Structures are given as structure tokens and as C-alpha cells.
Image 1 (cartoon, helix red, strand yellow):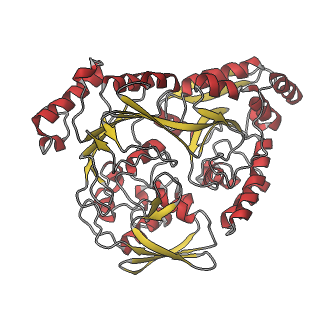
Image 2 (cartoon, one colour; image 1 turned 60 degrees about the horizontal axis):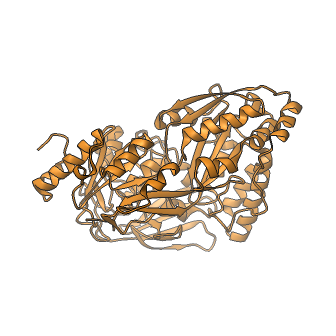
Length: 532
């Protein structure tokens, strides 16, 4: 057996299946004829856009990582298929107090973690205390960048083995939705205690697949959990392969070396419109934008930020670069959140003359800009062609733009700590689960990077802060919607970002794959996917 084959191939897949997967990996590196690149039945091979950062759901932020994690772990609740509506998962049911500050969950009985330890109320308490209590024995196994999601939690207590109660310090409308997000996934306390800082390379959850191995820059392999509480998965195993170059990923899909390719470059979609492939599309709560450094440099002046919005030709980007796979964004809230979206907002039009006028008013003609661009990453929408086109648009009105390009994880390491002293602007994309998520984590003053948030451009407006704080505690959805719509108006005017696009996500599968669908959450849920 070749040394690079996963150990599960020595079991029921037989020598023939193992040989087929060997051919698939050879085809991946050599791009040989498709007839040699047939992956074995029962094994899904996914072409992803980047190497994961970690397999600890509490320690990561990228959808690329989440797509793996949602198949290894469960939360107390989950999104119902095809929706962002919450349904039971590890919790069979729950009750909410009249004042909205107490959530009591009844847990599913007889569930075990992949390492054999028991899932119970104490495990749930341990998970949230690990994230939120700096004195917890395993708090140093973080970081916990999205623990913001649960900042409203005052206490978590195990009432008995199957009952856990969360008491909030105030009503918090997105609480259930946040529990369904990957940050709310439940990890094995025993596994974290055993592996410590290395838990992210040795994950253990309760999900439909269990971790098998991670070979850096090569693959992450997960195998079917035969004891899964919601029934066994259809596939015996899933291999997630990081293929950062979009052209290589496309070539491997065409050659048969991978079965599912996510985030197909728009220019490549036409290559899959024929026999042998299926294209899936799904709109969702996505925003692609440019973070502007509002703390220092040219973009500290709102007129210069507005000028950048007028300078960038978003219609051309959407139609020509993205081949119509997105719509132009008008602000920080995606239209997928129809109940909270401000339909009165219009996208900044492409108006180079107005951009030049604003630059002249601000005395910023010829301003030099450093622009961070990534080679590829979660929801980043052809980042290099997009970045090049944006550079040209900005140059047309007088900006002098220098692009610095980085691999995705390196890019995040430069952007997330903040742009101060580093750059003037950076690409970014967010896929969110609630209208609260993106603005609360990336537009509030209290979300500046030195405060632990993702407001990498240091935007600050007390009115926006107050509206966001009020919206998240409002128990009436109509009132929440009013507050979010008012926030969108202010942010649109302040222009802390260049609002570019709302993506319609895509994927392509081989015709050997059945029951695959994309989710509005942008996660990959693979339990019921069949591979012939």
C-alpha cells in the first residue's frame, strides 16, 4: 500500500478502490487523462480553496475551515436544510423565559464524542466556559476570535445530565442563530485536555464524520461515524484537498481528481456546462468589500472614502470579472436578510468625475495607497482579477495604488490585527448568519482589533455603536429591522468600506455525486451526499 494513502483504504475499500484513489492523486499532480483519475466509490474528494487553519471550531473564523468542521461536530441546534432557520440538534428541545434572558435546553440522550467520552450537560458547560472564562484550565488552548457571539452569556449551568441552562445578562436576539454557527459547535472536553494546544490537529466531536488524518498542504481525511445519533453518513469517507490555485482546481475537477469543487471561478463555469458535471448555485448572506483604513492615511477623510466608492466600477466587476455570479452591494447588510435589509439604499454609482471632485476637496489627489489582496480564500470572488481591476479604477481618478498579494492564511494574519501602520485598504468577504454578526464584529468602535474584534479599518461612529447595541437586545423583530436599516444608512454615508458585491455561491460536482446541495449558510453539509 503506498504510504500516502489514508489508513481507511486498508479496510473495506479493497485493493481496487485503493488503486483508484492512487490514480486520482497521481492525476492531480500530473494532470493526466481523465480516464486515469477515477476516485473510488464511497469516497468524496473535495477541492477546497485553502489549507485550514485549525479544526477547532472555537479557534477559527474562515468558511473554508467551517466547511470541514460542520461535518465533524454538532451544536445544540443547527440550521434546517436549505434555510437559516434553527432546528434541534444535540438539544432535542428548549424553552425561553418570557424576558428573553434564560434558555433551557433538553439534551439528546445516548450521544458520545468520537473519542468515546460522553456528551452531557457538563460537557456543554465546559465548552462555553472554555471560551468565555479566562481562568478556565483550557482557556489557553484558544484563541477564541468569535467568542463575541456569546458575550451576552452570564452563566451556564448543568441542571442535570440532560438539562443545561444559559442565563444572559440581557435579551440577545441572535442567540439561537449563533449557537447554530460553527463557533457554537461542541468539542470533546477529554480531547482538549489530552491534546491541549494541539487539539486543532486532533479534533473530536459528535458529528457524522470523525477525524482520520491531516497531512499539511495535502489533505484532511474524515471517515464515517457509524454511531452517529442522526444515522450514518452515506459516504464512507471525505477527503478535503487544499488547492489554492483556481486554475489547478479547475483542471483537477475536469480531470476527475476531485468530485466536488467549491467556489468555481466565474470564468471557468462554462467548462462544466455539459455531460459529466452538475453546477449548483445558492444565494446567501454574503458581502464582498474593501476595508478602508479610517484611522490614518488618505482614508481617514470620509470624502476620500466616498471617492473610492464612486471610483470603483462595481457593475463592471460583477458583470465582466465575476461573469454575473454576484449582484452589486449597497451597504454592509446582504439582501438575503430581507426582513432587515434597507431597500432604499442605492449602491454608489460609478462616477469618476465625482470621485475626482471629492479628492480635490480633500486635497488628496495622487494619494498613494497600499492595497492588500489575497491569492484566494473563503468567498473572495476571484480576488486577484478583482484587485487588479479595482487598482485600475482607482488609478483612473488619481490614486497611486500598490498591490501586495498574500496566501489566504498569511493575508488574514496581516489584516485581522488591523491595517494601522500596514496598509490603506484590503479585500474582505464575510458570510454571516444574522444581520447582527458582521456589523457588530467589524463596524463597532469596541470591535477595533486591539479590543479583540475585526474592525480592521478602525471605523468609529457613536450612532452606529448605539444602534447595534440596541438592535441585538430588541425582542421585537420589527424594531430590530428598523434599527438595522437606520444603521445601514449611516454606514453607507460614512463609507468605511467600498461596498462591492453580494455573491451567489457556486459549486460543481461530478455526475457520480448525488444529493448534494449548497446551503444559504455557505457551509458544506455532506452527511447525505452519495458517491457512486
